[in-house]
Length: 493
Image (tube, rainbow, N blue to C red):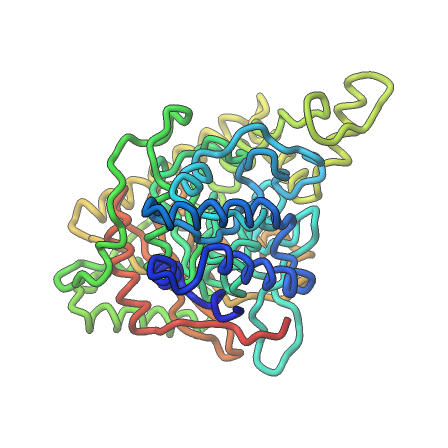
């Protein structure tokens, strides 16, 4: 039965339809895999055994009646940021202890409507604030990959580390994730999986715990490009409950796969060649350029001049919005409550005990840049920089560039409890150096595995597209995937 967990979504979908096995058998195989592996990987914070079995049984009945949906019987993991009715939803934070919403996020509701099965809630950085999945109240996620000849534990990236680790370790067929500054693409690159951040507004944010509302966007992490396309088709929708969701028809992304990239213009931004960038990353980038050129694409050198301001501007805008969004957690209505002599002390005690160190750091930064004396100097300036970053991309696309190819991360996965990272938060923030521009501009971006570093760890390339042209990204990513092949970790857990 364990072989069932190695099937891609596309493969499992076909074999379920053919009657080779049932949705219940597929779900049981995944639940057994989770029970065996999760103590070592810590990818799931809650496993919904009974709910999964019940949903799988319902899928079997619909398949038998000829009423199967596009994801009928496919077992998925859900990042703990998505509200799931009656099921643990805590953004992996102590301050939301015991919270079980009475509503379902629009994205997860779309997946259930298409027949998917929920295996459980996936670990993540607290309130999606982190690049290593070490800020979770439930402890760090361990990357299924290990460096050659080493037993050292590595991070899976963040904030969607549980999603990426679970997909890479075959503990779910695919997973939901969110991306505010790289939280889908960076963990995908660290785990040899595919992750796409769609255009801002492509997926509804309703029912997703907010970090930075103008940057947050939901997307899938999957084992290959086809599975990512299948999942995004179901996740995306317009939603009257989210005024930032866009009323555009959702294309059949899967149909874009296999289309030629001949004649397509691929931009290579010179600003992404940064001082101190490892030779392995540059070599991987050149390899990717070669693959696309061989496939008939035209490679064009481009400039995105305001790139160097993206990371500092992001770490003003995102904490500012987080400071505002997280003000609602006060111990009054739900979650943790730490008593005090009066309501003000109760607020203070609850927030001091409930938020972790990184979340407190970002709330304090955000509150500072929004304060009366500093709003114009910091927040307003950062928003102006954001406009310039967006214009850089608009100018390039207006000049005829179809997609932009860059590295996904500045390195492969690093160690859990890495002392350099722990001592200097800025080093951790630099993991987002290639990804934050996409969120600042509201564009779609996909990370696709492209090779291994000298220690045998996965590395990814990133493609950036025009607004709502995810089909172009899938089409181009499929060319890279075909040339690079699939990457899977050796089982040690």
